Image (cartoon, rainbow, N blue to C red):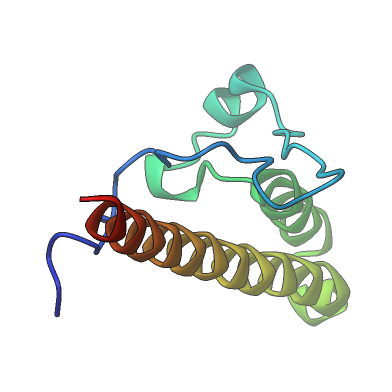
Length: 110
């Protein structure tokens, strides 16, 4: 491992998010802070998929004890979590490659 080109898990991206892109949609939270607080969502669940988790929880509360009827909402939530994970890994890899590129360019310029 190369610690000088490995971004940490909680590091804010150091490069322009539009670098290499013509257009790129910014991610926005759909669930509001008030909705998440009123639903008493734990902090680790307050991510970009929180709106789907809230829908799933409300379905479970409405359909209890027949929670199997909420399979579609559960699938939507788990799919969203997976896609969020993939996107975060792509961002990590992009940051790592850009750090390596910057190091290589600095070395060539010196």
